[in-house]
Image 1 (cartoon, rainbow, N blue to C red):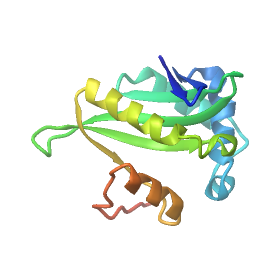
Image 2: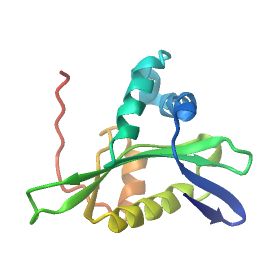
Image 3: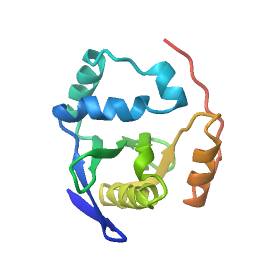
Image 4: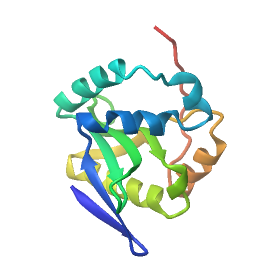
Length: 157
């Protein structure tokens, strides 16, 4: 896909493949909330990956460092909408940057790349959700220009 050069550190962005699923799940599980809600059973993740990979409006990104280790991920979804004049939205979810790589500027560069990808695919609005307790993430998203304009609700089904 593309590479990001951050002060001489090269990161490569790829469309995730099935072999990446264990590393992506490990990234998702490696935080306070992820430890509670992610599972060691990879079967549901593999099924979800198959559905995501087959959907042309979805892109699951795996970011590798120079050694080939997956150090970040995000899921991008293009959502056509009848609101906002029929706009296409870029939904950004499941964002994780490995602890060893945080602070290097990868998160900001990855979001800039994702927003450009969204524009190239017709999106006119980027949106995301984040857990209410992730105050560090809130500050990060606000530094990138995201505005906490809505209140989200969830209901387990």
